[in-house]
Length: 307
Image 1 (cartoon, rainbow, N blue to C red):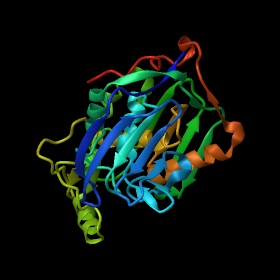
Image 2: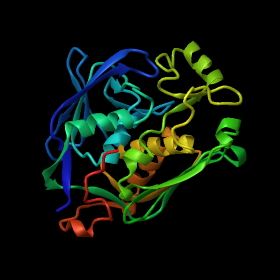
Image 3: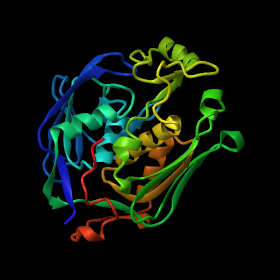
């Protein structure tokens, strides 16, 4: 049986929110089979559970926000991406503020935290959302066109193309593909950082956003170049970060996927629209498990490799 996975022990992190600038503590704890990933706002007068699912995504401006009633947790995509990359199904995440800490701007710190706690198999079959028919969402036309698509595939692959028309971005590879079955998420995707343009950062701060952002947790560019002293971590870091985000956004469906995802200039909003369009078509998906792990896609029966 290809089994569900959770942590062996709890682990903690402290950081600041990218947009809020507030100090925040995370405690990541094991959870029983079929729990899914659940954020818990423990800073509120009465703690509130916010289970991860596509319908719980209520805001996609600059990040993905989950809500349960009036309680919110913002900027979940990097932590969700790490959970997907390591194949974690069940997890409680206690959080002391409204926004997940940005840490280094990638998913690598979350990967390290989760792997340090250890990952263990559980006595329940892992449940995959399998895409049966193609589903696509599109927005805009011509130079404003954006689209995202899911198609049937025995595995989970992602292909993303960016188009920012900026010298620093144009000089890098703008189309990247990744196969989750390779087990190379930690090495090839997780270290890609979020990025921003210095002129946009100034406008965001004037609007009370990006208050916790800086060169230590994002790639920042002026009109011509990358300002970070160390440069890029990957030759195609911009496109790889968009794949990192997409992995986290898609994992908000509540299950690992069996699908081929492809996108052009997509973002958090379009990724969530894609999930909602998929779920609205009952004939386009089903839930499957693998009693014989050998029938699962190549690489899915193994725990993700460390660095």
